[in-house]
Image 1 (cartoon, rainbow, N blue to C red):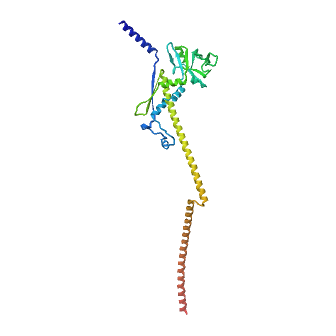
Image 2 (cartoon, rainbow, N blue to C red):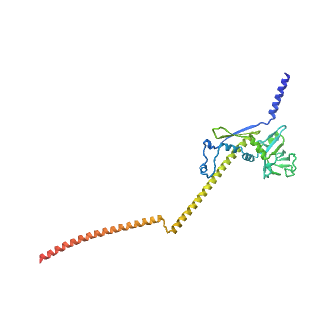
Image 3 (tube, rainbow, N blue to C red):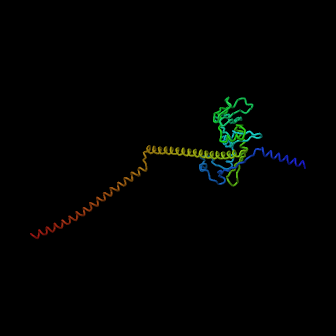
Length: 345
């Protein structure tokens, strides 16, 4: 019975220690709708040109999009955007806590050298006051110094020259409360981009939500809930920006191709018209449209003159009829006059 009690006590103590000091893991989820022509979604705007062989294969399906979402390039771009290769730790008695989203200071490397993303190094930030802090290199076997100055104390916002770029440390709104409740030491750790990318890719899961839909589910596991949420949100944002950029690139190239073809066709048509004109001049040929126009104009003029002649003939005919009537009248009057003269004699 005593052994059972001891065993239960050991199990309870082990469970307490495990739960107390094991770093919790948070899993965040998000979904994204991608276009899939195989499932009947909206066809690509350029599919007509693809059928003509003008733009190549411009198709998008879920399998391809899942591979893009899991790609190293996309993960690396997200890490760079959020500076996730720079981690701030608060050193505890047993475990160190990642201060992402709850850091008393803001760390920014500017004018980064090409070696910044290929090396691992740590700096110890020691809080002195609301105006001053101390910065030390972590003891390693490194031969060259990281901090390229002999100063030990710095002001917030001051430019600090380092081997991998210029370092600026600003204080956040939480600085006074944080160091009032915690120790003064914060570790600034910079990890190689390749290692961080591999770690994030291993914890990123991308899968199709349903075989009958084009909705893709993304999940990410991290000890810091806010870090996992920010990573997924920015991953989807960069994915969408890249998709829009690709569409614009294809549209611009297609538009440029069509414009060039139209310009070439116009040039060819102009050359054909010049050849036709030269052929007509060489063979003394006139334009059919011009000839037809001249013929119509001549016909109209002829009809006009015929009409004028008919009017004149009608007028002459009327005058002749009138003259005939006058001559007949004069003839009868002359006869009557002669008869009267004979009777008087």
